[in-house]
Length: 227
Ligand code: ADP
Ligand code: MG
Image (tube, rainbow, N blue to C red; front, side, top):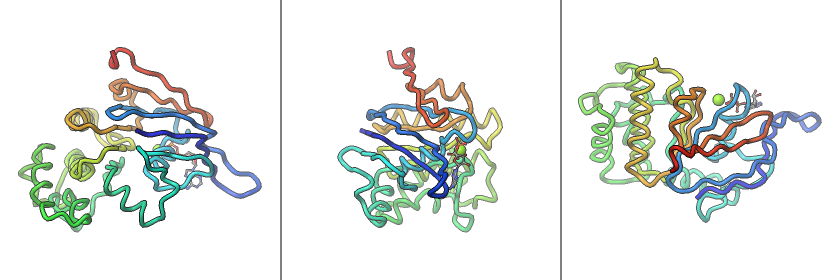
């Protein structure tokens, strides 16, 4: 489903660039759950942003099904991302002036779907926030805000779910509930879940572990889960 070839990412000036990702090659299958782990600054967020096509790599290509991301224009990329990807950030990134319902409906609204509100309502129910639909983000706890963010990321049934430390700003118990929810919703779909995390317990729930260090990637398959 995802094929990454010779992926290199450098930041900084021409003369002495900082090479964050050094010639990575990997694939992910539909339905995979992948945890990206590694020390702070090892390029986890950079890799996720490249997969989301929010950044352009210095070298190399990313192919999602038949589509090579670098062949799309900025406008085409925005459409492609909207139709195929759901992204969850550590700091939720909800829109403060919109209710939980309107936040969750956003991807469908932008795509002009007439059933946006009904589908967002049912997604809020799935994340346990039926009675919070008309609350604004400021009126919700951190865990509730992250659940709205998950509803928004999954409401359009994306084939690729990307989450950057989705439990990083939550206490342990709330974090576990949010992670449970993410895995539950993933299991109901045929999507691919890619999760950046510091938490090895969370990482171990994924079928595959991608360990980033010094620009290189080591892939470990979790045979207990994949068996
Ligand atoms: P992680 O998510 O694993 O903590 P990041 O992908 O955020 O790591 O960052 C990897 C490295 O790239 C860090 O050294 C960081 O300072 C650097 N970096 C990240 N984004 C930029 C940027 N936009 N410009 C310059 N350097 C950056
Ligand atoms: Mg990061």
